[in-house]
Structure formats: C-alpha cells, structure tokens
Image (cartoon, rainbow, N blue to C red):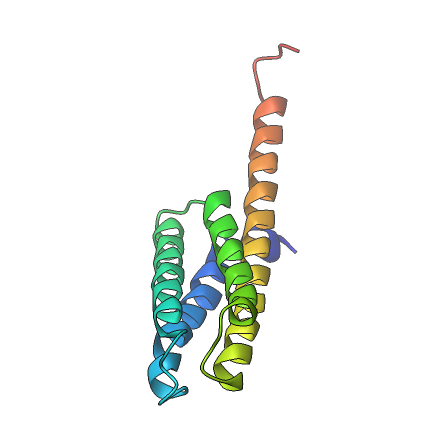
Length: 136
C-alpha cells in the first residue's frame, strides 16, 4: 500500500500529460472541421494541463511532493471543461461530450493529487511533532 500513498506526482505526470496532449490534438485530429467555439479553450486548457504535468515531472526528479495548489488548479480546470460545453455553444456533440469526459477525468485526477499532497503534508507534520523539541 506504500506505493499508492507515496506516488509523488506520478499520477499528475501520466494522466495530466496524456489529457493535456489530447486537449491539444483533438481540435486538429478528431474534430476536424468543427474548430469554431471550443478550439481556443481546448488549446489553452491543454497547455496549462501539460505545464502542470511538467511540474509533476520536475517534482518527481527532485524527489518532492506535488503541491496541493497544482492539484486544485487541475481540478478547477476539470470542472471548467465539464461545464463549459453546456454553458457555451460548441461545434457539435462530439466536442461537447469529449470535453465533458476529459473534464471529469481532470477533476478526478486533480482531486486525487490534492488528497495525496494533503496526506503527505499531514504525515510530515505528524513526524515533526513526534520528533520535535518536546514542548506541548
């Protein structure tokens, strides 16, 4: 069970990079002629998600925990991707549901990263309290 509680951002790297690349490529590859309203949204969100995944790579290389803020931003981007196609007109049903599914995955991934980062921070705090100076 230790592997799952100490992932150090590997989820963010694997899931985030694949979802970021999908958001960058989908407007050109899958949606083809449907580039209108959701094109720039997918490109911008894809760039931010890929940047967060690269942040996860750097954290892994430096043997550090991915921050809670990065997971929170990822979750917020996921919520945005879920709600945006229903609030703003899209070019068709494929981009609408594609963005919604990617948004759900991003929100889940972001929540998971936040939970793991918070758990790691609480573990560090409890270890420092146990091995602290003995003051109450």
